[in-house]
Image (tube, rainbow, N blue to C red):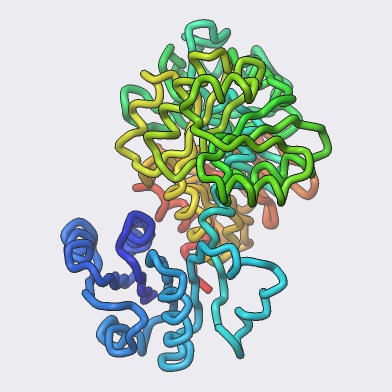
Length: 458
């Protein structure tokens, strides 16, 4: 498939990396020649330097025979015009745009993106995606990573193994014997910086970061077995009252359980906007690094603090200060992936990576076949793929133990009708079942062959 990706920043580069690795014909367009050169030097892609919204630039990028265009530049307006030109001049069938401005995303203006107006098939909002990721983190604050699958019935949890973990040094196969009714599976382990799919004989060691699939109803028990306390959220402090912080606070206000939320926002205008939009949330105007202001926000009594300003270093330092003031769990928004190794030494419990969140969202919308969800782990080191089993799939009608999965692939959960099951060796996979798979990046093409989903895109 021929794809044009407009914008060679972190998101565009990652999408190009995924799609070119799956042997698609990818062309990257960016106005910065250095970014284009980086893409062509490191990936199997073609590059065009120029403004993505210019028809002659898209012509040079091969738009006349392209099947999809992904507009992910830093400008909303450029992304929108690019999709319009792609549609009106070149007739490109599938158009995806990343839009940041809340005004463009307001539901009352959704008619704007109809085919006869501004023809954009899928709108991706990084801030909405990040806010959703933040709310998922809050659902299990002791996990460093979370994602939902199978319509919320199964969760992927990232759990760091500490010295007080009850199952440390225990072979994974014994976990099935010890907790026979627990619907949870360890599908990935990061040890000394390397991510791998564990075998039944492997053990979990102190310091490991493991990825665990768990049934929604078994999350509290799973967290307890892995040495994490289940925390009922009653008090939350947000540092940052911009679009992400405001969206998170609005969701907490509208939730079934009452959560006392306080926001600290440095920009006065932003703080006033948040105070106007929220009903029960207290908004404090000031610096989230100020110990006195944190104390006024009740940081020592808070269950969790979430730092979501647009500055990575502010978020990290706010988390460190909150931890020092007695907050048990802190979560930081981190844009720069090179800062992630500092999380553990600084005592930051979890982080949200907007780039990975946006990449996962775009992948979810561009894969076709029966793929329902895609979640990118780490620096595109692995993917979790949720897909429906087709009748033509080689795995249809086979038991799990009979399927020759690649070494880096494990099944996390299987959904049969309304039941979500932990995979066992004698579990039969039938046509129409939905399975969630963990796959290392190099094994993704093999998974797609097994699932018969490499398939076509939209």
